[in-house]
Length: 450
Image (tube, helix red, strand yellow):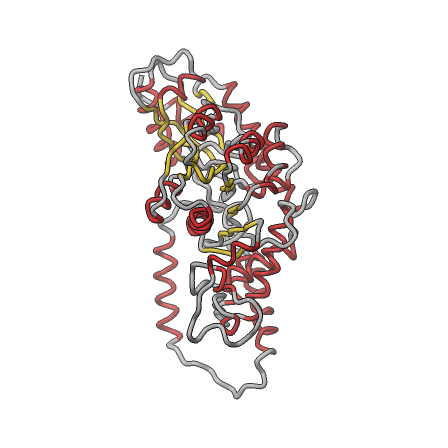
């Protein structure tokens, strides 16, 4: 878990950082070293009460360990503790953030997007929908019923009408339902989910984009989870077509703290039209006087934000540039292939029924049972038994109709079914499929539900 080399690199970098402040009079803030050691031992003990998120046998929620360069750069920046609201709070880190925004925009073919980092996808999506509401006042926002629940909550906060669009059995937006609602004339923004968090499925963006001019709608892409996968070489044809059209949407949210190898929280919102910055315009009596350059607080709803997030992302981009064909993209391809191979192995098992073929790196599967109620009971038992065997999974509650579409021999005697869900977002997962499957099979064989 801990590589001593990381601490050596951090110590060397801190020495270099200190050189920039040698002209100041010597000052060493005092603190009780022994008491601090004692407290940190308590912290370390308390922190053992966590799942081993960093390990390949954690195949549950979407928790990807930060790259060592991101960890070290983040920690390094804390000795300065920059604030990326105004330039006098973080000159270097603000410059790094602006450079990162350009690089993230280039992933989608945008040369100079307006954007900034945010605390996470929720705050980034809130800003995108806030702008959408300004441009389409009084109009509804719609997203798939398999989109992240945050869109409905955000619209409640913003006072924007919201409607969920039905999803198909493969987890994508139902286009016929969308067009039925669009014909009513009161929809202003369609949220296309590029990698939903339940299944990893990608909404049919080319079809959504085709409706944009006909109905005068804005299209916002929530690519918080799946945004980086456009860099990969192994997307399916339909999925690739969706990613190839991402540059045509009005706004994009992407979370570097998911597949971008960053610590929490590091989200990002990007706008194709920099002119939307006018909606952010405000005055501050004391924060924007140190420079005539753009202060990031002038284009953000958040005020104080950790410059450390920008420093960590910038360092990661230097080591692992986010471009097709590079080392970073290869890690994503490994996750794609791990999910497909895992789906194939589940298909060959008599204990499990995999649902939709994974578009990205999330695999959802039911436990073989005579009926849906029993499938739920068995899934919960497998979840607990596997955890005792140090294999950590996640569960997802689905409408019985979706599950029965794939498990056609399973009788439906409940409204919903608890299924198992594995997010194979670590590149190492591909090499760990044998022990993962072995543990799953053991857990299923010990399931007592019949």
